[in-house]
Amino acid sequence: MTDGPRQIPTYRQVLSNREFRALFGARVLSDWGDAIARVAIAALVLHRSGSAMFAAAVFAVSFLPQVFGQALLAPYADRVSRRTLLVVCDLLRAAFVTVLVLAVVLRVPLILLLVLLFVVELVGAPFFAAGYALLTELFDDRSMFLRASSLTSLTSQLNQVLGVALGGLVVGFLGAERALWIDAATFVVSAVILASFVRPRAAAAALGLPGPGDLARDVREGLAHLRGDQSLRALLVLAWVMTLVLVAPEAVALPYAAAHGDDAKVGGVLLAAVPFGAVIGVAIVGAWRPVAQVRRMLPLATLAPVPLLGLAADPSWPLAAALFVLSGICQGFMVPLMATYSLLAPDAMRGRLNGLAGSGFALVTVVAFLTVGALADITNESAAIVVSAVATLAFLAVTWVVWPRQQLIDSAAQTYS
Figure 1: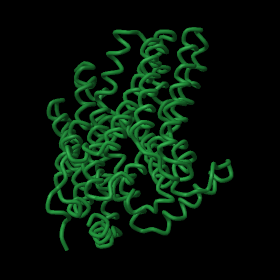
Figure 2: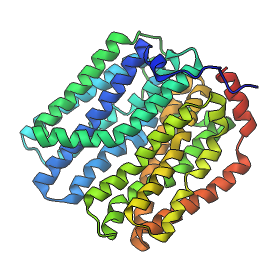
Figure 3: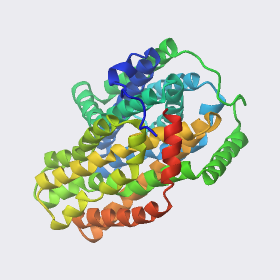
Figure 4: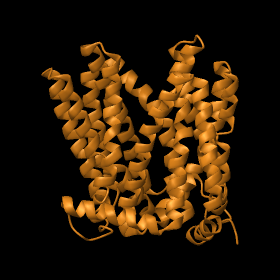
């Protein structure tokens, strides 16, 4: 058995694929558009209400559609052309953002602005499932697909930091109203790029447009498939189990800085530390051969909580940031996990299975943020992170017992050969 091809594809090689460049560029534009919209609406709400709680509600409302929208709407990614679905998602978001701008001009009640933001995020919910499913179709060489997936993940991590910063700059220089027009434009440009440079493909499952009953049935079929597929189920459970420790540092970064007498700038550094580490981790893991990436997923995931145990000493922010970065580096395991999960899913169900994974991850993330926040209130920020790390290690101890290691390695060797 080998660990894959002799030469590991480079980012330049995967970017030489015109369709991937288009899909990659559209994804980046959509991420930036989402960030600009959230910051712009949060700024408007804060200005008009004077309430930090209402401003925070903007980010909660923008996140909620992912919880059920990806699961319920992802079957569209199997029933219709994935390129068409991506274009429609972008155009719908552009249209609703335009309505959002008009609502801002007319100074409608704040609750209506939040409803419109919710709709913008909801119609975009299938974009991730369709985009990742389409990505598997762009590369016959699966090692190229894994490298493309690595680049997409790395950029997504960067956008967690840069997207919010970009949104803040755009809103700061142009104002919320003009920023929202730019947001709408990003979606239009994304749609044009996809329509122009990604060739049309037939739907994976030629079942036609689904009604509400069809969507519910597709979701049930996806859940049934997950229950019967040990490899897919193991990968999904590992991603969900790791969520607690992945979000714990971000959940208490700002309160941690305040508790140590530092300002919001330090809090920003702590917020950026985990994504920064993840960028390094993705780059490191992406240089390994495909089967080696799959073989090392669980060991790397197990290392992620370990640096956070150092928070038991309640260190100053520079050391805490360093520990956050080390933990973030270990998040590189998510690249082969997501890629292998998508490849092992049947093509006719790939959209809905990706949607179920994303929906569950979003739900677990919300619960994790609330749990860590509650722990920090009951104890303190350091203790909340340490408890999260210990709980994750306990879950991982069970995962090691039931992990289908050889089955996944054999599947990876066959899939990436």
